[in-house]
Image (cartoon, rainbow, N blue to C red; front, side):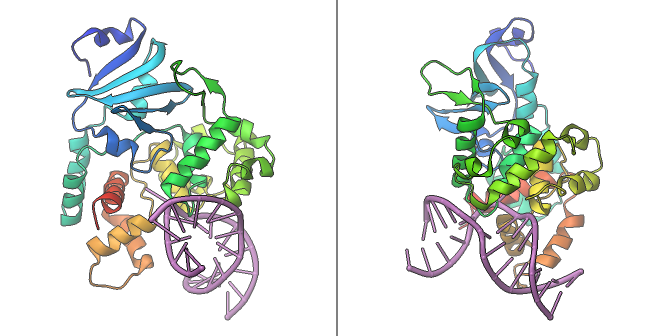
Length: 296
DNA sequence: CTCCAGGCGCCTT
DNA sequence: AAGGCGCATGGA
């Protein structure tokens, strides 16, 4: 994990920058693969918000370069978010050895999964249903701007806000949320925020449950069905075997694994249950990104 | 203009 | 249990 240069001492001496040595990490693909919605490309780097910190991330020869507007003592939050300790070659080696995955891995080398804040991730995906990724980003951006808290950013940037807590959203009116252009999803987000804020469900407890039970818990929330639960479990709770099946992945599975047969979502979802193994979620992300950016 | 987007909940059979 | 449909909004 260590790298030459001043940043090596970042654990001891507070610094506004950190060089992380990591191989096989395609930052652009990772941040632009529909798992997180608050990153923007600017001047060859990516700017976004992780928790309550503004962050700039850049790909370097040896890995990633991270920058914050204020000195940081402990960078664990960022390393956790970017999952730089994950051995990607081991992940890919655990995939089924088949031609579709081989092609997807070859075409999307360095694509990674992030580990996001669980509430932010869950709430963002509640807002994702029948929306294109660009629109999800717009809605999430508006939500942060109106209900998030101001956080420290470089002086030449417009104001930046954190993702609003469940407690903050729970006190909103439905019409306030609708003003963020989320349409029929507003009562879902509001209802889920209230359940979380009331403590009727403890998100921190979920990651210690078996996948099936954690999923069952999340699906008690309004607006959270199987697909959205699996996205949150994979991107926000660390369940690497979760495999969300959306229209893109369904299309990929049909075309790559069942090319001759007619579309049969039922059968395909049964196939998914047993085929992809302990790193199924990673396989899903490769198929999703491959289908979305490389096929047709 | 029409079609559809990282779905879900509810109402019918 | 399984299938159909409405839902807001805005790109393509």
